Image (cartoon, rainbow, N blue to C red; front, top):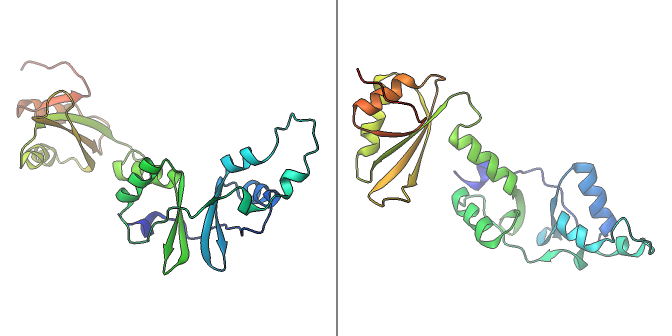
Amino acid sequence: MLVEEIMKTDVHTLTSNQTVQDVMDLFKDKRIRHAPIVDDGKVVGIVTDRDLKDAVPSRFTVSPKGEPYKKKVTEIMTPNPVTAHPLDFAEEVAMIFYEQKIGCIPVVSNQKLVGFLTETDLLYTFIELTGAHQPGSQIEVRVENRSGILYEVSKVFHQQNVNVLSVLVYPDRENNANKILVFRVQTMNPLAIINNLRKNGFDVLWPSMPQVNE
């Protein structure tokens, strides 16, 4: 999946000459927590709600509060932020979020801002990819870590005429010779599938149901 498929294109921006009060007003009005800072069409920084909290006094302070709100955005923003390209893979950008510990990233093409991506966008994309937002059941199967095993397990779902919404593959932390397949299937009663998986010699981890001897 490409960044251009999941990024927001209606981006609310600020300039470095605006004030902290402008940032507060924008965040409150648009109900956002991050905004890119754009001067002359170029992204020069990022400002977040955390920057705001650090910049303004506590609401419990008794000192005059006017001056901090007049600060320029350039004084509180993070300059030269990491950027992404619309044709970057979403998975690679997710790694940047993780490694850099950031919550948003401007999307730039030809040195112009074309979109904006937040950790919320990535989380929603993950939910869509896993099919967790659709009615269904989750089945986890421990299998050998070898070529062709996914096809063999999938045949059981085909025989049961059950639609697979998504498949995720995890390493088995207890045994490197195995891996865990997590299926999201379009049925609310997976009992028949579980029984058939076990009949075919597969180790069903979830749902954890007692085996029935026939």
